[in-house]
Image (cartoon, rainbow, N blue to C red; front, top):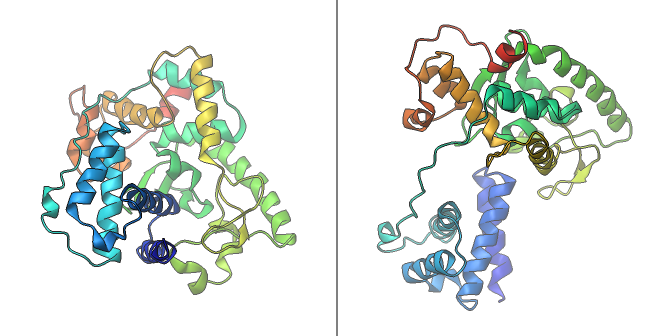
Length: 324
């Protein structure tokens, strides 16, 4: 199909103009290609709502994808038509998103959280402690930058989190010393990479043009960098990226098995546990909502299984656990 490379380039360009993440870019491009192949390489401008609905039905019935995956495919196609092709699909409101099943979040007990954490070491343990002690999402943790950790105020600034929102969450006092040592060691490695000519890092939102030298500054480096440099798929520049999130996922899964915890748990379970344990300790639900970055209080309410009590100051559940 001759138009396919050009169309994908248009999609890619529009995604980058809107500052979507590289993961969203790869996902949307994949869905557009699958949609075109499903319809025998017809150009999307020659198709409409019927083809979109048929594709979504195929995903649900034949491929048996989850409702969240089906909704992701729909979002990609709506982006293609509205933002790239500038085509308003008739009766687009009739394309109903799959209803997500209501699930009770899996939560560790305090002893289970400690048991998993103790089975890890080094930077993997530090990352897991931040997932639980600060309520970070997996990608928020691996994308954390040096400048966004405030040791004096004992807080972490999460930049461009889910929904492209910034928020502030608690930095466990227990982690101040080990995290400081971790950064000191990384600073030495960063200096070595700089001397070899590969000490730069990816800068979001075209900040590399506004601040040309910032990509090599220590403040912008990832707290948990990869051990080796890699090629940025957007710029083609050889840079030092953050650690691969799959490394932490595999380690946590292994620790859960080793601890003989028979729950469908993962890295995200630590975030669920952070919220639940704060509410159990009597912290106000709106305070927990702000720490988690939830837009709607109803999202936070899935963790409410204790009476709401007013919270004045925040102590991380990690500090309560390790410094009773």
